[in-house]
Image 1 (cartoon, rainbow over the protein chains, first blue to last red):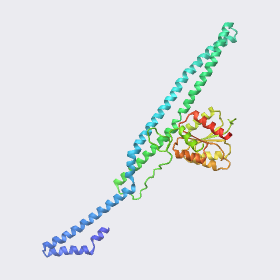
Image 2 (image 1 turned 60 degrees about the horizontal axis):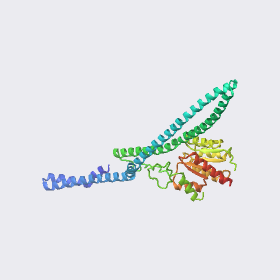
Image 3 (image 1 turned 90 degrees about the vertical axis):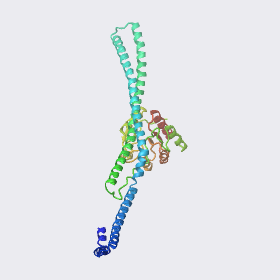
Length: 247
Length: 130
């Protein structure tokens, strides 16, 4: 619109009149001169427009803050996420193996208890029916003693294994925390990609909300091999730190 | 020294698996009187009923976080002396210090063992008794 107004300005009309007048007068040199003047004016307007567009593009890229954030994501956070996910595999693997080991070690104990119980049960039945002689009773008495021992030691071991199964389930909490972080990274990449598409496809709104990813101060589980500054490496260090604080 | 094994313990964690683990470990240690809450927002009103003697809480939870729950407990006249054990995956020094300053009685980092839980509980009771 503005451009059209400029085009119709009295100055321009005068220039065109000049051109027309010199052409009608057959003044080739003057005509050429006027023509060049008009062409030049047109060109400088074009340059100005390109300049304006370039500046706008530059500004919007800057306000986006996309380039830096994406570099961060590509250089640090994706490899970091890969390591986190690998750690999830390790943890689930450990949990599955610990559980399987506990189950495998419990099963023979249960079988032993069952078989010892059955054999003692038979003899006990015979004893109840008064079918045992003294020697057989002595034998049963010995068997009962070992039966009690086997039972109680098996139960203690099985209880231990069950506790291991219980503790192994802790992976679910920790892996979920890790996976949630990776999901939020994926979301952020998605949002950035959409913004880039918008930037490429049309001029972005200058104040597009830059998503300030909650670089929440909570870090979640420490991943082995990932640098985590200012963290303790286990319960012992927690205890040391707390005792240094007077705990 | 007699620890009252009938004391009522509130277990606060957003993961039900972790709540079950803690609940079972506590039961194994003789503490059978437990209840559960999934974050600070649900835990606080439960605590304010005055039914509880001990609080075990996670840190990172949706809604109200464990550290804020701890601060609320310490600021509440009726609850301020309740022992609080934090069981969390947060291992930043500054966070452990923050929890200590907020008045936590024990701090356990996940993953933890049954033995660690027992030790920390014993220590807390020792201090309360002594």
